[in-house]
Length: 254
Image 1 (tube, rainbow, N blue to C red):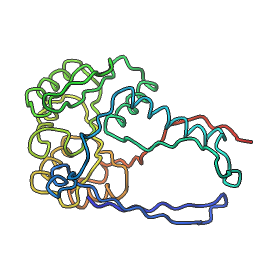
Image 2: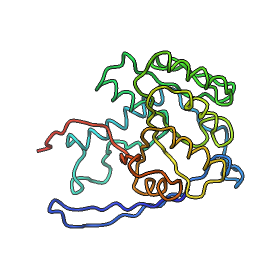
Image 3: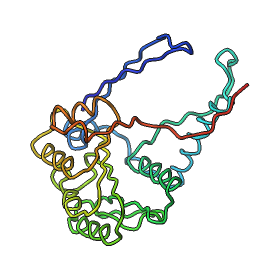
Image 4: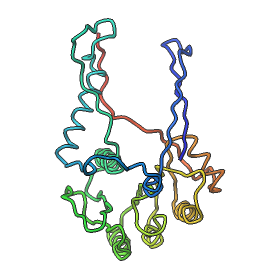
């Protein structure tokens, strides 16, 4: 997927100071492997433990708070040899996105009936927190059927699905459709990647997900345009919610 976005920077008077353009090219795992993008990597791919992720989250929050609370010095105050707060970018995953989403939803509405259903790779299991009450096995179609039955039995008000290529089993992630077709409650789907030139299977899966979903959430206007122009999704079904940051209290550094 090729994506490009502009960020405008304005001063306190609203005058344009600069315009920043970022460009990203993202590949599906299978395509990246075919192109040899993983060749030459040393050792095994890093597997993050829960303790390591918690430490990363702590460092990231410390950096955010250092800026919000005025701990970080101004540019003209920095001297050679000074140590600044460590800034952590990543690892950003669907798991961390979902964890933050669940945390905020629980804070707003309570967590009595809030739980998460992760997808495990074949022959893999993980030590999940209590919020995880059921797990999908990526290539086991029956696990998707059981999940649908579980959700319907619990009578949940809403299912919020995070969709990304390579997570769900089946051709182009088609196994998830088995679950979605059986749901008896509203479905809100967040689409993390939208392909401009999908193959026939990718198009069919995403079009059915769009049809089954009551709302579709994207994170950029470009993604919303792709849904409308490439997949024929009505604009009234799409909600644009840009990537957010932790909501921290504001403190005047002065």
